[in-house]
Length: 428
Image (tube, rainbow, N blue to C red; front, top):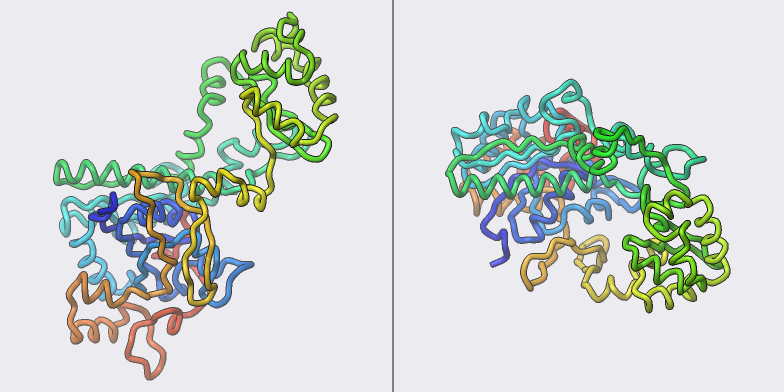
């Protein structure tokens, strides 16, 4: 069995942060049942451009492989009844909504424990379920600014800069997945579930790590550094070569001693201006211009060969196409393929989570409501009469005139991705 093959998760999730956290659990074998609001056209991620046609988007494929999809209107009593039946046979309810929404729509532990005392309710929200900002929507860009990340990033002479990736979203997804797994472990041990109140804000503040500790205890005020230089280790930064850029880092004294030899100045290893971490930091305005002038004399490859040979931490600054072609990327099986009815063969990056020797099996992301039959018949045991009654009552969304089957694959619900306070609520 795969590590999480005995785990079933109801995912009331959307867009990036929440689906990013649960996709790794799905890759590890968990059955992740993605609840999609039929009133909003399902997960808004289905419509993210530029690579989107109808409800098929490569953005959605990225975050939802190996999952199942069920269209379910949680705002209707009948849809709620189906959801509660799912809670009875599941291990966790996982969501990424605005901080006040989980309680508002009744998906916290107190709301569900009478159905399943061991249920774990993991809520990844923008700002958490308590505090003055709990009702605010949270987005990666906003959080990078609010938590001080943008002030730390970019050139000293330039504006505050966002990371090229949505690192608060992705880190928040990982934090939520860790919290959910810890909750599951405790629930299986003790027979009692709980809430996991996780937020993007908490994640962003927590990741300030040592700069925050330096500030809180020594009054340190972080500043942006030229060429992405490390705040205390010199040299450890990007250097411009004759044909591109590379990173060189001396995180240990032995690396500086080796670098001095590679660049043709072995005497600098013992130079009192540069001999120690403290000396180099104190005299960085002298040392760095000297190093920059030297590195501009050769190409990136001409520098990397002797640097690798000397075991000095270094690497080229690749663009994304180059990173996808890196020999190590291929050797680590980090590119995987799935087959999709619209996109054909979809290539994407594998989960970095590794458990044991077996590699995950990858299945494309589900079309909207694709797993209706599996969920309502196989898991819940509903018969035709029950399904028909729930369908007519709107549990699975509105039906087009003359149709008698729930919306599937975008055939019945409005396409667009508008948000409601329920499943489609803007959260994280």
